[in-house]
Each structure stands twice: as structure tokens, then as C-alpha cells.
Image (cartoon, rainbow, N blue to C red; front, side):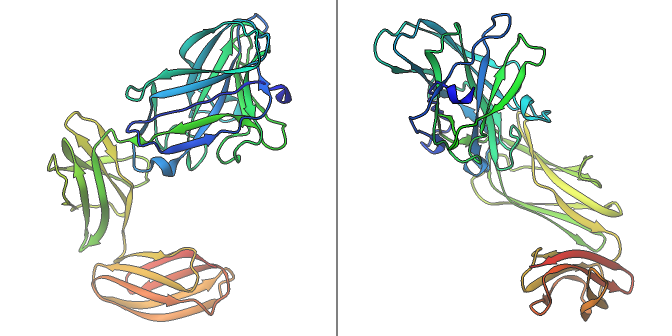
Length: 399
């Protein structure tokens, strides 16, 4: 089936704000074409192809707003008149298999009637949208199935089954990391309407796609830093904003399992600012064990956005973190102690053999212990810090 694919799709997408940035491109104009046909009851089958936008290109934004799309229809000599329906859809985030990757039903963008083509083969470009108004949007880092990419689908169907009209594929196509080597069909005449099939062309084939633009932020708060530290039995949170626009307040949320968060307080925001602003909050009654914190910035229209999570360990007399992990030669052991104390640091391999040991004398507060590991072999290790009133165990890998 794939080697009879007969169509060209030129998709040009502009996202607000539009900076002319290329988000995705595959502009080879060679290959066969595809006509998805009709189901058993004669209903036109909708064919969909994926478009993957690298997340790095929209990093720091909340949404991608698609404002313009262009489809190119490849029509051979003698192709009859046909109505072409154009669609889009987003990712089905409940999908567990390729067949179900897209949400159903696809949403109609519009319909165009193409006249018969008595002359030479031709590509007809059909456009929808403009450079300002959104056709549709998707949330960054949510509507995707592949880490590092934002994914959605564009598709079409033909009103008649004549394959002289078709959607052209391109050979060679981009690497699989930029486009899934598959196509999706939506056939409402079937008891299983969603279906995925893979290209068998060599080299890789895909549809002619191109995307331009950028993402945008729906909540105009730019968070520069967010830090959490333990001090004398309380936990102190500090954060800095670089920009605020119509910001109302920050809610501080806490969890002991990273899943169930509750609000434990709030701090009023400056509201509107283009300069550095510093904020702080003290959790005077942290729970015993691990405390996970996040900020929820709320604007004056009640739209909100949550920050990354920060962890503080509140048991024993010290909180310990190690970095980098994996490590090459030098491991840093960061310790935050509630009181001055001393003890023993040991590192053992997976068999329990001690490969490093030293005495530690900790002052109250923060300190960093450098541990040189250039003389130990690559592998997995356990670091243990035995204090008078506490013991902390961490694992790391040596490269």
C-alpha cells in the first residue's frame, strides 16, 4: 500500500508570536502519492500524518498556537473533480498503542472543491488561516508522546476514490526522530476506526511538511530561580521573578509523595514588573521525611501555572545531596546540618567493599565536601554518612 502513496502535502504553519523560526521542515519534492479511499459503506477515509516540533524550539512557553496551514494536493493528468476535506487533531494522551495516537474525531478545517485536471500533472496549494488568528493550539510538554517533541496531526480525505488525486509522500524523508515513519487512518465504517500503518519505502518516506513560528506564554510570569533549603527546623523557600504582568499572587504547595499537593500559604505578587523581584516563604511546620514544594503563580484573571518541584528532607539532623551523578573524578557532597556534628563518610562498591573513607566535621548550616574518585573503578557505589544522631545513604555511578 505504501509504495502506491500518491500525494504532496505542503504544510506551512505560523505560530504566535511569529518570528519566522523554522520548527519543522521536509521539503523534498520526490516520491509517490497516496489516496486513502473509502470504507466499506462508502464513507471517505481520513488520512493523518504526524508533525513533530522539537520542544527546545518552544522552550519556556505554555502553548503553541497554529495560525496558518497550507496543503499541497498532487493531481495527475485526467484527475476528476473532487471535494477535499482538511482536518487536524491532537494527541490522545490516553493512547497505549500506535493505532490510537490521535484524538477522534478529527476536526474539520475546511473543504475545497478542485476541478478536473485535463492537462499535465500539477500540485494545487490550499491554504487555511492567516498570520494572526489561531486555527488551533496545543499545550507545550503535554500534547506529545515522544520525549523532546510536541506532536499533532494534519490530514485529509477525498470525496471520490479516483487515485489520480492524491497526497504525495517524499523520499528521502527526515530522520525518524523528526517524523514517525507511519501514517494514521480514520475509518468510521470500521469497528476499529483508528489504524496505524508503517512505511516500507527505503529510504525513509514521509509527507512533505514544513512548520514555522514559535510558542507563546499564556501566563506572563518569568521565574528566574526557585530554591528551597532547610534551616534550624524550618524550610525556607526563595524565588526570583524577571518579569510579571497582571500577576496576583504565588501559592506555595507541598506534598510528601510528589503527587498530592496542598496549599500551605501564599505570597502577594508585585503585579507588574520588568525588573528582578525577590520573594521568600517559610514553612514553619514541615512534615517529617521528604517535603516537596512547588509554586503556583496566579494572575488576576485566575489563570495559573506551576513551577518545577524542590525537595527538602526533614528527618535526622542533616539533609544531603550529591552531584554530579554519574560522576567522573570529583563528587561533591552538599550537606545542610541543623547543628554542628561529626561522623564518618564511607563509600562501598556493590559487594560491600569499602573503597573510600574519611572523617567529617560538620558546622551548622551548609557546606560542600569534595570527594576525589579518580582512583576507583567505574561502577555503582553507595555513599554513607554516619553522624552521631543520623545516617544518610545515597547511591551514585562512577564513569
